[in-house]
Image 1 (tube, rainbow, N blue to C red):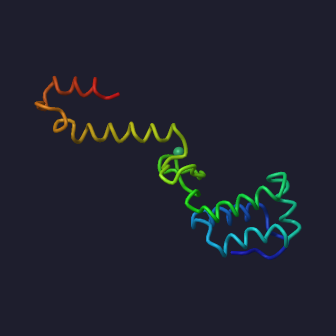
Image 2: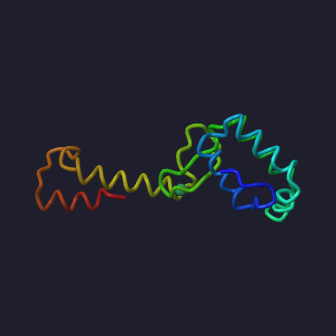
Image 3: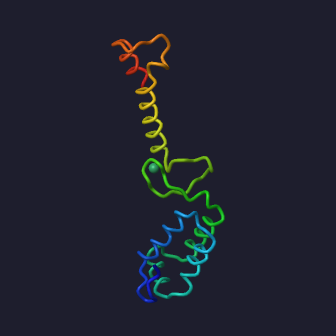
Length: 134
Ligand SMILES: [Zn+2]
């Protein structure tokens, strides 16, 4: 998967970073990613174009290697994001809220009749579901 020296583009590089992300920055890949920028002048130039400076990138890789739980995918929108808390599941407040809304809707659809005390599947119950669904 490693192209010969000289033809390594920032897209190849991005692919490697994405793979490492998926695998939670294992040591071997992290070292590889850090050393890449030193060994190959073209990659250094590509990275400079990509992120202006090399050091913040290396710090970010080290950071994610040391705290690999932070490298996550949002189960709602599928985007990569860096967790601020271990229990954080979604990339944003928006995805969190949309997921909660969807769960609530699915829950009411499935269990609305059971959850509501004294309710039967009648017209009245349907109206109540609408009002209860925030
Ligand atoms: Zn998201």
